[in-house]
Length: 163
Image (cartoon, rainbow, N blue to C red; front, top):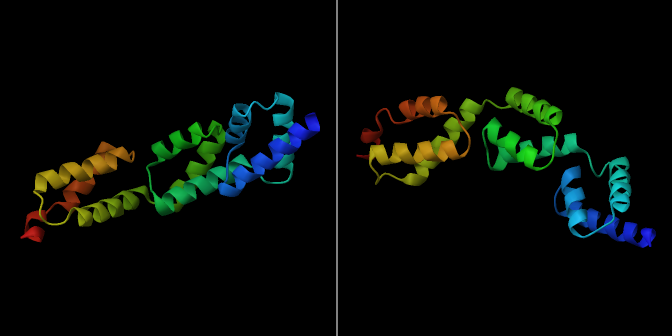
């Protein structure tokens, strides 16, 4: 019975990992939701770790890289997402430390503001545009201080841009 359960759980886990990389916690959670016995789950996770299919450090690095390339967020939001994926603090600190060396989050936020301003178009008041950009950056986890600096730089002369 365990061999059949193990084979089913392993096949399901590999199917999940084909869709996207996952953390050990996520695989454990998904197998638990399918009512797999704990000993089978442990065996599957051990097997997947041994084969290199599951590696929380690589998963975290890939997660942050993907986020920064396609949906940038501030380090605090990235940390929260990684924590929700079940990663431990050491891995999160390591990966975010590397990300802070690779990416200038001030430049990232500034670029995000530029893109958002372009999407707003020119038929919007200065105050409304500032408020919308601030909300956009705030929802992505950037600090109020950084947002204020960006708004001051981006909206100095904004009125002349739309006229």
